[in-house]
Amino acid sequence: MFIQKTVKTCLSGVRSVSCSGLRAAASRLQHSQAQHHGDARSVRPETSSAKTLMDIGTRRIFTEDHDLFRQSVRRFFQEEVVPHHNEWEKAGQVSRELWEKAGEQGLLGVLTPEEHGGIGGDLLSAAVVWEEQMYSNCSGPGFALHSEIVMPYISNYGSKEQIQRFIPQMTAGKCIGAIAMTEPGAGSDLQGVRTYARKDGSDWILNGNKVFITNGWMSDMVVVVTVTNREAKTAAHGISLFMVEDGMKGFHKGRKLEKIGLKAQDTAELFFEDVRLPAEALLGEVNKGFYYLMNELPQERLMIADMAMASCEFMFEETRNYVMQRKAFGKTIAHLQTVQHKLAELKTDICVGRAFVDNCLQLHAEKRLDSSTASMAKFWASDLQNKVATQCVQLHGGWGYMWEYPIAKAFADARVQPIYGGTNEIMKELIARSIVSQK
View 1 (cartoon, rainbow, N blue to C red):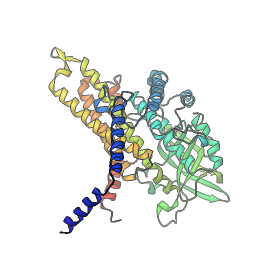
View 2: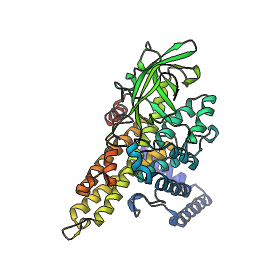
View 3: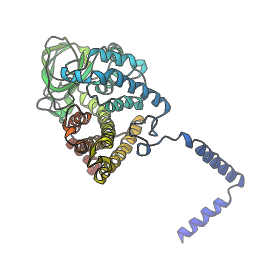
View 4: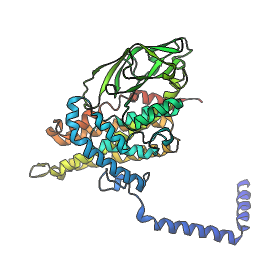
């Protein structure tokens, strides 16, 4: 009876609404529908219905301005990076000239505010640079780490003097940035850091070592994760960040590490032996470093996820082109049903992953991406990247195992993705905490 009375009351209320109000609402609806149909021609196709997974002008999260920027970025990688990458793989690093060219082109510090000396673009513009690097299959340039991992620490937590000193130079590619978190005994567990800085007057004395540091060999400035209070109630409450510059007494760079993949990306060991740091080398507040890291890590994990999906898209298109040309049994192997079904599976997986990662990009652009969701994106996309890499090498047959083939390099580069930025096992731990938490 209560429900019936409520419904009757509601209907009575609806009848009392003026006809003019209903007509106005209908008119607005018709206008909206007409506008929608008028814009139908400009609707951007998603990757699932695009001609290729790397087409410019696709995906609803982007605009025509992003398309123009993407054309410029794609041209840069094809003209300035691809022709030299084999040479850089042998050298274990890219050239400094490339960094400065990237700065001139406006590819560094894209997301950093213009008033700080950055480009002042949006997150999706930064994502364009990440994706186009993966579409070029050139993993050497450490632009993404420099721009979207290192620079935000300075821009978000640095003093006015630190911002003015470093950000413009980093945007120009004249100061290469790195961040030193990992140690021989501390990887995903940042609370296990042993590098220590003790107070000495107004200065700090830094001792310790770091390993697997991207841009480490070429770096001009390194943000170092350091313990500053060994008596803190938890390790997280005693961590600080310091900016250590190349050439400081006691700061030594070890050898460039030889890796399975990412061969043109300089990765190094760093050693700190009684490095005297002035008070102004402290980034943000003392003992707040772990808090800063937790704030910034979701963006790093989203970046890894987006680059993983872009790599999947590249590998798929590379494999599609290969099977359309490779002949066996008197016809191209693309005519074999087993190959067609495998391509169908791969494309479906990639498009599903892309939809989720694009949603995460949109959420982060709106400052609504939480740590758990970023962890899902990183874990899922990097696992998928390795699955796609394995299947695409298989479809290439023996040639897929040859280094001269792009798919072999993409396969080798993919393996580290589930490891850095927090292992995927740690990602599952973070996701699980949000599931079983009582708060």
